[in-house]
Image (cartoon, rainbow, N blue to C red; front, side):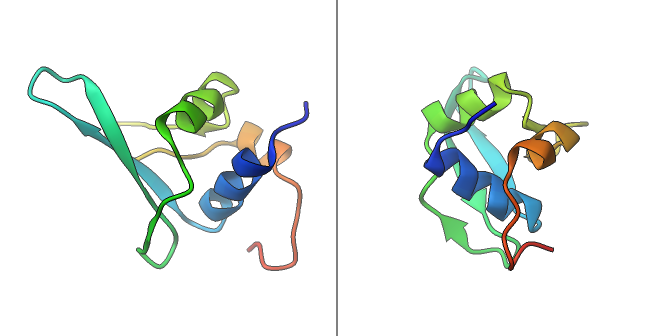
Length: 85
Protein backbone atom coordinates (compact mmCIF):
# COMPACT_ATOMS: atom_id res chain seq x y z
CA UNK A 1 0.00 0.00 0.00
CA UNK A 2 1.38 3.36 -0.97
CA UNK A 3 1.14 6.25 1.49
CA UNK A 4 1.56 9.97 0.92
CA UNK A 5 4.65 12.00 1.73
CA UNK A 6 2.94 13.72 4.67
CA UNK A 7 1.83 10.38 6.10
CA UNK A 8 5.38 9.13 5.66
CA UNK A 9 6.80 12.08 7.65
CA UNK A 10 4.37 11.57 10.51
CA UNK A 11 5.02 7.84 10.65
CA UNK A 12 8.79 8.44 10.72
CA UNK A 13 8.44 10.73 13.72
CA UNK A 14 6.14 8.23 15.45
CA UNK A 15 8.57 5.38 14.71
CA UNK A 16 11.29 7.35 16.46
CA UNK A 17 9.18 7.66 19.62
CA UNK A 18 6.68 10.42 18.90
CA UNK A 19 3.04 10.52 19.98
CA UNK A 20 -0.28 12.11 19.04
CA UNK A 21 -2.54 13.44 21.81
CA UNK A 22 -6.15 14.32 20.99
CA UNK A 23 -7.80 17.51 22.22
CA UNK A 24 -11.46 17.11 23.17
CA UNK A 25 -14.22 19.50 24.24
CA UNK A 26 -16.54 19.06 27.23
CA UNK A 27 -18.87 16.81 25.23
CA UNK A 28 -15.99 14.46 24.39
CA UNK A 29 -15.82 15.42 20.70
CA UNK A 30 -12.37 15.65 19.13
CA UNK A 31 -11.55 19.28 18.31
CA UNK A 32 -7.87 19.00 17.46
CA UNK A 33 -4.65 17.19 18.15
CA UNK A 34 -1.12 17.74 19.36
CA UNK A 35 1.70 15.88 17.62
CA UNK A 36 4.93 15.56 19.60
CA UNK A 37 8.25 14.18 18.41
CA UNK A 38 10.47 12.00 20.62
CA UNK A 39 12.13 15.06 22.21
CA UNK A 40 8.77 16.51 23.27
CA UNK A 41 8.67 19.26 20.65
CA UNK A 42 5.24 20.14 19.25
CA UNK A 43 5.10 19.41 15.51
CA UNK A 44 2.70 21.12 13.11
CA UNK A 45 2.69 18.74 10.14
CA UNK A 46 -0.15 16.47 11.32
CA UNK A 47 -3.71 17.59 10.63
CA UNK A 48 -6.94 16.00 11.83
CA UNK A 49 -7.60 14.67 8.32
CA UNK A 50 -4.14 13.09 8.15
CA UNK A 51 -4.70 11.57 11.59
CA UNK A 52 -7.97 10.00 10.41
CA UNK A 53 -6.24 8.56 7.32
CA UNK A 54 -3.53 6.95 9.44
CA UNK A 55 -6.10 5.58 11.87
CA UNK A 56 -8.18 4.14 9.01
CA UNK A 57 -5.07 2.40 7.65
CA UNK A 58 -4.45 1.01 11.17
CA UNK A 59 -1.01 2.60 11.23
CA UNK A 60 -1.60 4.22 14.64
CA UNK A 61 -3.39 3.07 17.77
CA UNK A 62 -4.19 4.20 21.28
CA UNK A 63 -4.54 1.79 24.17
CA UNK A 64 -5.87 2.51 27.64
CA UNK A 65 -6.50 6.21 27.00
CA UNK A 66 -2.85 6.86 26.21
CA UNK A 67 -1.65 9.01 23.26
CA UNK A 68 -1.63 7.43 19.81
CA UNK A 69 1.52 5.54 18.84
CA UNK A 70 2.65 3.69 15.73
CA UNK A 71 1.56 0.06 15.28
CA UNK A 72 3.28 -2.89 13.64
CA UNK A 73 1.23 -2.17 10.53
CA UNK A 74 2.51 1.42 10.60
CA UNK A 75 6.08 0.18 10.85
CA UNK A 76 5.50 -1.97 7.78
CA UNK A 77 4.12 1.01 5.85
CA UNK A 78 6.91 3.42 6.71
CA UNK A 79 9.98 3.35 4.50
CA UNK A 80 13.25 3.09 6.34
CA UNK A 81 15.56 6.05 6.65
CA UNK A 82 19.02 6.42 8.07
CA UNK A 83 17.94 8.35 11.19
CA UNK A 84 15.18 5.92 12.29
CA UNK A 85 15.87 3.96 15.43
